Amino acid sequence: MSDNAPRLRLYNTLTHQKEEFVPIDRENVRMYVCGPTVYDYAHIGNARPVIVFDVLFRLLRHLYGKDHVTYARNITDVDDKINARAARDYPGLPLNEAIRKVTETTNAQFQADVAALGCLAPTTQPRATEYLDEMRGLIDRLVKRGFAYVADDHVLFSVAAMNNAQGGPRYGALARRSLDEMIAGARVDVASYKRDEMDFVLWKPSKAGEPGWPSPAGISVPGRPGWHIECSAMSMAKLLSPFGGGLECDDPEKNVFDIHAGGIDLVFPHHENEIAQSCCALGTQRMANIWMHNGFLQVEGQKMSKSLGNFVTIHELLATEKFGGRKWPGEVLRLAMLMTHYRQPIDFTASALVEAEKTLDAWYRAVGDVDAGDTSCADVLNALADDLNTSKAIAALHELRAEAFKGSEGARRTLKRNANLLGLLEGTESEWLAGKAQDMAVDGAEIEARIKERLSYLREKNFAEADRIRGELLEKGIQLKDGKDPTTGERVTTWEVKR
Image (cartoon, rainbow, N blue to C red; front, side, top):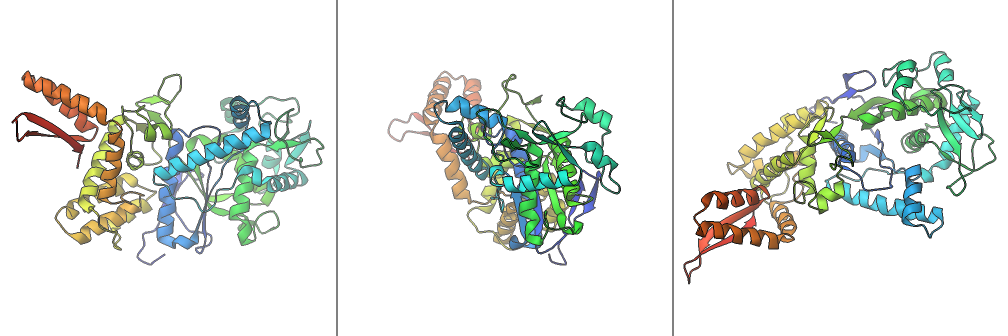
C-alpha cells in the first residue's frame, strides 16, 4: 500500500460505525463471505453480496497487491433443501449420487452466472462436505471447553455457558438484541433435548436415507453438521491455519481474520452463531475485526416473492425475457446494483437497468477500444475507500467520461482503468456492441415485424404511432435508420444496436 493511497474506512456492523481498516497482516489481508447453498438458481438478491464484495476484493487488491489478499467464499453443499431437490429430480438414483448431481450442476450454473456479472473468482471456494474433519474438531473443542453438550445424539451450543464465561464476548452483540428480543424475533426450534430455547444445533443425527458422516463427541450414529458450524470451520481452515491459527493454536491474536461479510439477513442468527462458536472454541474476543453487511433488495417496489410473480434469478435476467421484456447484459445488472450504496435497501427495477445500460453505452463510446492506462483517479479511489461509496465513484467516472469525450486518449485510458476498479468497462466498445447485437439477433424477426408495422403507420401518416414504435425499440437498444430505396424511391428502414 503506497503512502499516497487513501485510508480505507469500512462500516463495522459490530460497532455501528465506520472504522479505519488496519489489516492484521498487510502481506495477506483476509476476507470471508458467505456463499451459496447450491440447490437451485441464484436469485438477484443473492447477486448483491457477490457484486458488492467483489468490488471490495478488487479494492483490497489495488491497495495491498493482488498476491496479498485472500478471499474465501464458501459453497454449502449439505442442506435439507438440497436433499429435497435431489430426491425430486433424480428419484431413480441413490440419494448421495442424486445430491452430487444437484450440487455439481447448480454450482456450475452459479459460477457461470456470477462470472457473467463481472465478478472475479475468489481465492478459494471451500465446499462444506470437504471440511467435515474441521467441523468435528471444532465441535469436540466446544464440548471439551463446556460450551456445547450432547443430547439425543445432537450436539448443541449453550448460549448460557457463553454468557456466563468470564471475560468473553456476549451472545447478541452483533445483532444488538437481548435474549428476550432474539427469542421473540426468531423461529426457535423447540425441542425437549435443549437446555435453553436459544441453544442451537452444531450437529444432528441423519434420518434414514439422508447423507451421514461419523459424528463427533462420542456419538455412535451417523450425522451431519448444522449450517452455522460449517462457516466457522471453513473460515478457520482457509484464513487461520496458514498463519498458525486454528484449533492447534492457543494464541487468540492468531485466531482472528480481517473481514467477514454477507447479506443483512445473515446477521441473526447465522453470523451471531458463527461468532459464538468460533470465539468460544478459539478463546478470542472476536472472530473477525470487521463485519460488513449489504442491505435488502426488493423488485419493482415489492419484496421479491414467487407468490407475487416477481421472483427472478440471475440466469433469467441474463438469458430470458422475463424481466423488462428482454435479456440484460451482466455488466448492466452489475452497474444497476452499484448505483445504490451497498448498505442501503435497493429497489431493483427495469428502469434502473435501462439507465445503467445508457450509462455503459456512453462510457464505451468514450473509451472505444483503448487499453486501460495506469493512472488512478483520486476521486474514484477516495469514494471507494469511504465505505465503498460506489454511487460517488460512479459520479466521478461520469466526469472522466466528459474529459474522454474531448478526445484525449489519456483520459480515455484513465476512465477505463478506474471503471475497472468497479468491475466495469473490462471489455472494448467493439466487444460491448457485438455482445448486444448477438442478444438482439435472437429477436430479429420481432424487430422486423415492428418495423413493418411502423412503415404501415407512416404510409397512413399516423406519425404518433410510428414514433411510439421507434421509441419502444430505442428503449430496448435498437436504433432505426430511415432511408430510400435507390431504385424505387420507397422508404426503407434498417436497424442496429444503438451506439
